[in-house]
Amino acid sequence: MTETVLLVGGGGREHAIAHALDRSEERDEFDFYACAGNRNPGIAALTDGFETLDTSDTDAVVDYAESVDATLAVIGPEKPLAEGVVDALEEAGIYAFGPRQADARIETDKSFQREFMEANDIPGCPDYAIFTDMELACDYIDEYDGDLAVKPAGLTGGKGVRVTGDQITKAEAKTYLRESDYEKVVLEERLVGEEFTVQALVAGDDVLITPAVQDHKRAYEGDEGPNTGGMGSYTDATFQLPFMSELHSFEALQVLEATIEALDDYRGVLYGQFMLTSEGVKVVEFNARFGDPEAMNVLPILDTDFYEVLVGARDDGSRMPELEFQSRATVCKYAVPEGYPTDPQDGTRIEVDEESAAAAAAEHDGDAFLFYASVDEGDDGLYTTTSRSFAVVGVADTIGEAEAIAEDAIAVAGEEGFHVRHDIGTEELVQSRIDHVERLTE
Ligand code: AMP
Ligand code: GLY
Image 1: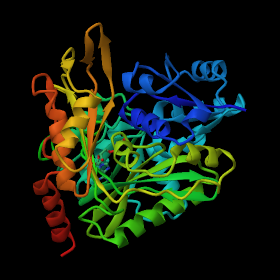
Image 2: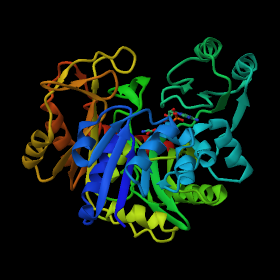
Image 3: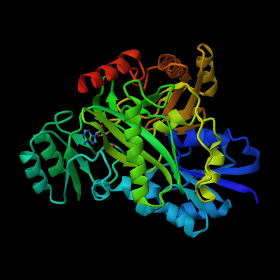
Image 4: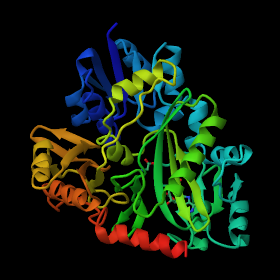
């Protein structure tokens, strides 16, 4: 039987997944299709067919999967998971690498996430309270001794959380809640420290860990401005980031393993967002999928055949091959439209392509990858939309070299119409993270 893989989703993360599958030694042995709400030209170029459809519409995804005779699906974004696309594909007899709807609640319902952690004694849970009445939530903010993270319980594309004492005052937090139409919010202790992400691939008894990544959620340099889906991220040449010790990795792994055990039969990616605090590693949140941008850091340096990983996961767990990563650092930088995320300006021509990225890397001792996110295809080329446009990833022996590659690759786009966080992965910013953790743990 010929295998047919279906990739669901059309962002930078999914382009990185497509790229990992396309590198498979068995690429000639399987057919490869993709569907997404937007036509991603990078994914379209790597697949045998690409369909534009609403991936939150589970019937539409199943219809397309059946029409291409999919035998294996991999789900990138959270929305289809929240809608139960894995359950729907399973009912149609198609295995999907991703959690079922009930398990995806670990991401899609932040109140469930905290209650689940507490009920199962999962370490690293901050103090929290859940409210459906926004006036009671406001009273709690007034009475709470200290700063709080205000988190809508449902999905907000990473843009709904507000942290008092950091982005807003307590008075502004109350206005935010009163003016919102949120049905449920989680108010939790503000965690202070350095954030990092660890993503685990899970199937059956297998829990495979990928290197720690640091994302940059704030729109502007120096971690200023509104929260975004993520502006860029880096990894070091080891599993730890420069401000972490092996103990921190171990604590994160313990949290992931305890969560996976309590979820019982979870499959897909479990993404842990952690805060390294003066009291050890705490959990900021879980996601039920690869991070975007974090997938673009770990997948390009994965030496293990990702197609074999998926087939191993499907063939009932404990069959996934061990993951081997190159001992190289990565720096990913997103180019987003000017004004993103509050007032994004679309319509800028994108001059960067795979050749220009490769040429930038050739100047250094490393590699460069280009991953498209949300772009419009015009007659004469690609144009920006109002979402993140494309990302470049530099890969080299050190973070500094990887950063230089990413900068050279992205410079081809020019400054006009784009915004890039040039500080991501720079020695100065990485050193400030190390200094921060030293101050915290003094
Ligand atoms: P989330 O949507 O849960 O990823 O939250 C977005 C961002 O809000 C996180 O990456 C953190 O920077 C911040 N955040 C969330 N929860 C907390 C918390 N308890 N303390 C401090 N910052 C938080
Ligand atoms: N980079 C954060 C996320 O994917 O949610």
